[in-house]
Amino acid sequence: SIPVIMQMGAEAYAAIGTDTSKGTKTFALTGHVANTGLIEVPFGGTLRQIVNDIGGGVVNDDGTLCGIDFKAVQIGGPSGGCLTKEHLDMPLDYENLTAVGAMVGSGGLVVMNNQTCMVKIARFFMQFTQNESCGKCVPCREGTKQMLALLDDIIEGRATGETIELLEELAQTIKIGSLCGLGKTAPNPVLSTLKNFRDEYNAHVFEKRCPTSRCSALKEYKIDVSKCKSCSLCAKKCPVEAITGAKGIPYEIDQTKCIKCGVCLESCKFDAIK
View 1 (tube, rainbow, N blue to C red):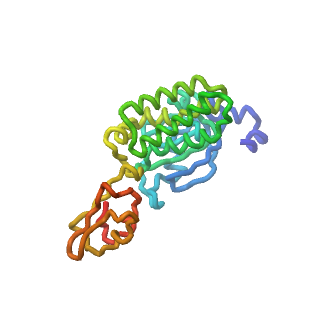
View 2 (spheres, rainbow, N blue to C red):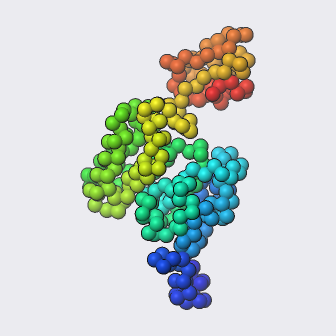
View 3 (cartoon, rainbow, N blue to C red):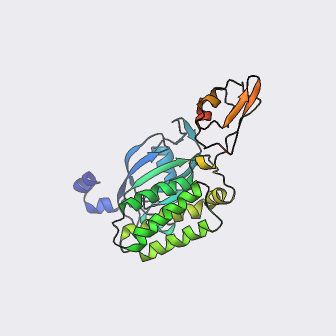
């Protein structure tokens, strides 16, 4: 933007963008996208243009291009909010982002594919803002700790039917009662994921299931007897001896002993453990 202003003047720069959000914005594009890095785009461009045209499309966890598996993007840094497929063609400017519970903020753009657990994402950003709390005001200092604890309960299978309601109520209290901008925006990732991905929260709480299988405490590892070769490798690797079987007899996992560590899944060479 500086070269444009220096060479063509402020009026020429102000002509770029929208009527209310003039000029350009530098974003740090990262996450599940083919091309990452710093980009500068005019205000008013769309998320679809950024992710597909500039970013080269959405990728799988292994880096291979998957194209259409866009799930969300966290915009504005840890205190920002999530945009979904519904927002792909929304012009990105200050007003539109504020209207959907997000913000331009620091210009971070974290692209996420369909294998991303939005509850864990909310917890990740909540941890960051909780660490950044100066501790001066009680709503931010104590409230963010309690929000983090509630998110841990959800992820680790301890949540009850009241947890989501309590999490939402606490988030609103922190937003209203905090003294500074950090505290007032700290709940944003939780509130935006609750708004756009509430079904994922419900699955974690009421079904004790992570739809993306990212939360290890909610996994239930099972052995496919049609694929098991009775090699005993999984049983040997299991740190709590939760797997039993014998030569010629498919092995099985004792769910009462299983600690959800995933070692069996990693050790099986026959794709027999799911």
